Image (cartoon, rainbow, N blue to C red; front, side, top):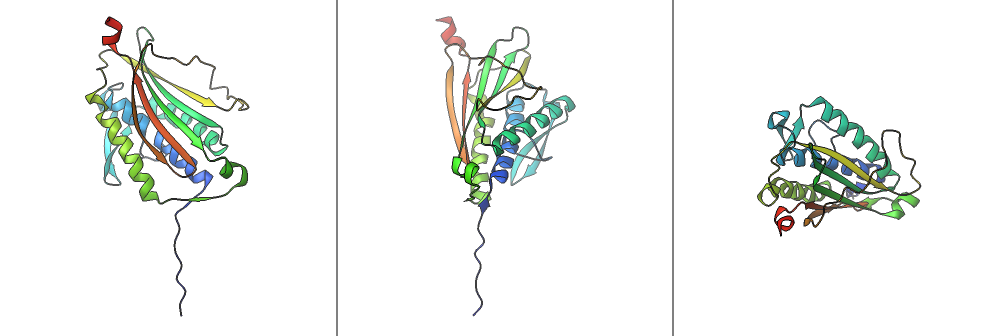
Length: 214
């Protein structure tokens, strides 16, 4: 009698780090990039800086802005290194007024890492399809954020904060920064996704002009 082999959806630490890195940045030419999705839907960069492609049955974004592409690419590479080491706790994408540097939005990505995987090299199991469904849900929420977030009616710039373990050696390209908080922010919690090794939770906080006027 022929034996039957059951294929398992194995997730390694390196594979999980690649998924999370691609979610935030852009390792492939057509990836789920939450960063690009935010910048596009919030109008931080001109619409003509992007183009849409189809992948996994969903529209995804590419950027033609070489400076932005280089910035996110180098950023993603560093994040992947920290993720594989189990040293990355949180990433925050900051949107600020170009004129005043006032923080208008903070897109917070909280990261929980399975310490047993990092310390003992064990593997976990979860299907790519299930992970992809969870990521798609977040991307749809980001795309629909224009329905409740205030209009960014002035030129804006971005910054990225990385929260790591204290024993991490900081590369020269990174500098110490304050938390760039928003006074009396409104907050909206979005979906999370879980590779079984890294769990990523998403929260956006934004400046509430109505509260400022009271």
